[in-house]
Structure formats: structure tokens, C-alpha cells
Amino acid sequence: MTNPPRILPVHLAVIMDGNGRWAQARGLPREAGHRAGAEAVRRIVTRCRVLGIRHLSLYTFSSENWNRPPKEISALFGLLLDFLGQEVPRMVQQGIALKVLGDVEGLPLPQRTALRRAMRSTEAGREMTLNLALNYGGRAELVRAVRSFLAEGARPEDITEQSLAARLYTTGQPDPDLLVRTSGELRLSNFLLYQCAYSELHFSPVLWPDFDEAQLQLALDDYATRSRRFGKTQEQTDAHHPRP
Image 1 (spheres, rainbow, N blue to C red):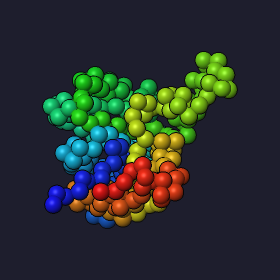
Image 2: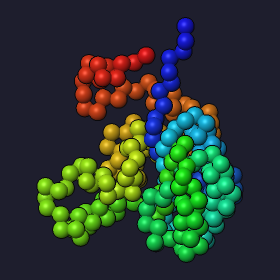
Image 3: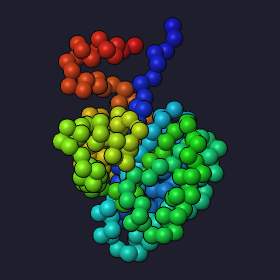
Image 4: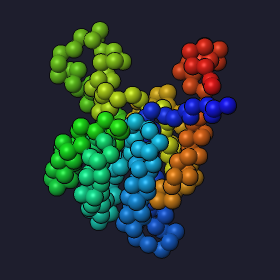
């Protein structure tokens, strides 16, 4: 008897939380937590690529994060440059396309330049899309979409769920099937608010630097037990998506 096919999300979104608390618990500066968090990013990206998850969105730097101390912000952006320098060649080799969700123009010039170069270098990737949410806020994303309608002189009937989705940063990609948040916090924090309307949610108590392949598998196993109904009854769901 063959094993039933595994149920995986096509699009996994992750709110990476807990770097600062991880460092504080060890008597280290917050920057050390962010460095450990960058290593966790490498682990999870690699594992998702191996598993065959086609889209991975990571909440990397929110528009609210500008309120953090300048030294911490500088360290975060330095880590971003290091990450791109080390990982882009690997992304090209593994067929991973890098995309940015958020206001790229609001980022410092070195990071803006490096991100654009990385997106050009990886745009042919077809195995997985890695979305880095940088200078991103879900409400600001919706305001941006509405302003684009106004700029085009759109009529009320032109505004549909489909035309709105086409103006979001994730245009052309499926909505997240699963949203994971680490560190035990139980909120969305302004991340992909429109796209996650029907996402399954998994909250892990593990701080992001300690989130490894085993913790990812726990989240995926949890997802595999969910019944994706989208407002349907159980009978309708089973009729359209029979379980193995």
C-alpha cells in the first residue's frame, strides 16, 4: 500500500518574531539575535525549496520597524546586504526567484540597489518564489492599491476583488495557504491582511532564531490536518477536495 500524498501549502507566509528576546535571554545585544535570525532564514528557505513549497513570504522589515533604535536598523540592513551577497548565487542555482513586497523606494540606497540587482539575477527562477517583505505594511499596501484606482480614473464597477488583487505586491501569486508566526505572539501585525483572509494560522511558541526544520515540520503537519472550507460546508469541501 502506497503512502497518501502529502498535503503542503503552495504559499507559506511567516512572521519571524523573537530575535530580540532570544538575544536578551542570552545576555547578548539585539543585533546578535538578528544575526541568529538570518541563519534561521537560510535554514527555512532551504528546507522549503527541498519540500517543494512554491511560494515563501517572510516578514523581514515592517514599515513600523523604522521606530527602532538607529543602531539596530543599521545592523538589520547590514545583515540584508550580507544575506543577498551570500545567497543570491545559491538562489540562481536552485531556481529561486527573489521578489520584494513593500516600498523599495523608501529603503537606503545600498539595499535598494542590491535588491534590484538580486531580483534581476534571479527572475528566471521557476522552482520557488521567495518574497521578502521590506518596508511593508498591509494597510499601506491597500492604500497604495486604492490610490492607483483613483489615478486611473476607475469607475466603481471597475473595482473588484480581482482588480484589487492585481494591484497588490503579491500580484500573480496565490494567497498564502498557511501563515506561521513564531515567539508565541497571537496577532497578524499588519502582514498580508488582504491576502490572508482565508489562510490557516499556526502560532509557534519558539523564538525565530530557534525555529528549525523540525519546527517547520510541526507547522506543516498541523496544516495537513486542517479542512480548507473557504466558507463551504464540510460536505461541499469533501466533494471538491476529497481527502486521500
